[in-house]
Length: 485
Image 1 (cartoon, helix red, strand yellow):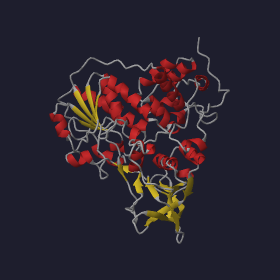
Image 2 (image 1 turned 90 degrees about the horizontal axis):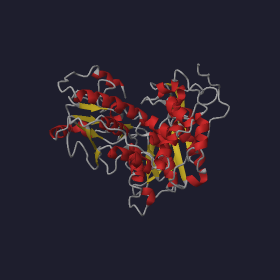
Image 3 (image 1 turned 45 degrees about the horizontal axis):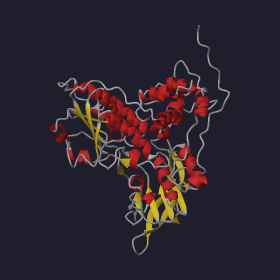
């Protein structure tokens, strides 16, 4: 008998409870509190379980979304967690920070009329349920192959590649430049959006799978790519990310009190500046903070500045709220917490006192002109609209470039004009035999799940390479990677 077609849901999309904005603006505890089991089952039962599964095509790692959602609807939460982890090693992380509204949920059949199924929140729920119950399972590992792979960088792409290769029986070592694994998940995303214990728990699974993680290893300085091959590695994967901050190149940018978002967030997140004096790595004492940029990193920075005690924390963006690339949820959280927004403004110079400390920023009003190459309307200066804003700290969050360390020590490695490593496509092959790359170091700063998808594709290619030692093929269309940034 054919299964009866499910009707449109009678219950609305379930909201997650959150900390009160006035309370959370003064602490670093996580803002959303997650679903209860009852909420999760209600939300899962909204799913139509479409035959064509349109949501799956929006997932860069091909999670069986209807499969795990159906298990939640049936109350089989542990089974649902295992179903997710067939394809995603970092479900508790992705459930928190991935832009599901632009990926899987965008394609949900309910999205236009009823609001999409909250796929990300359900993913987070099952991962948290499994972890809090103490029922996290280590995946089955294939017999040892005798092959060794070095992975440079322990961010999302490196961790995913390590997971897939370890499952296949290869001996994997991950090299991390900083003193804790996790990459941008640890140093770039604030505690209130992604608790560090969540990252540590998911990294711990890799360790239980036999993956060796070496921290405080700056590859390109301690070892080169050639050194790794001389140490007996059969292949190398480069997942060093986009950690080179961009600045605005305006007068006064070297004044005391001006930070890149990278430095500011690393100091606060990884070095725990928010817990001074227990951790003696403070940022400057400040009262008036300004942050430049419109992405998630800008939202993270300005919300962090507010939590560090700023009397005013202002985000300045040269377009309007509509054009901001940050997630709507993050913008709304910032607004609720008291962050001030100045739209259609751009800084022209920083102003310092007689001691070289920042005291103000001069800005120019903007208006929107014709669309630029990104499709967004180009900001155009309004003549004579200069004004000054007092500030004693400024955080520049306008994007990042490729981490340059490995390329500087490996001149034979093909890169584009921005320093991104060139590959022949999604398999991650570079122009050097046995060397693969993926994630932000190839495509530029992007999302956690896209970096993970790149790691998954590269792992397949590395596995193929390890069993074909005569594999001398040049990557096809290597030059096409020039257009990926």
